[in-house]
Image 1 (cartoon, rainbow, N blue to C red):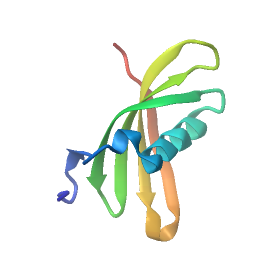
Image 2: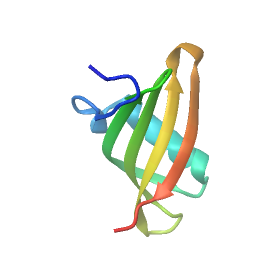
Image 3: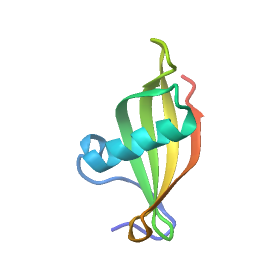
Length: 92
């Protein structure tokens, strides 16, 4: 069970789930329309008046360069609300 305010690894195979893929695509779309989503690498979640997802993903920069990013997406499903909180390039 998730602890209010605590960040935990998401349970099950969320890296391959349609909901998480859709959130990752949403994060890329919100960050930069030139970015193209490739795949989800990992996901963490936090209960915060809804759910905050921390999604590590791979995307291209409009060309063929693939980079890893962390997207932070806040979701309140009962309000049909989702908002990109941050989208940051991860450095190796």
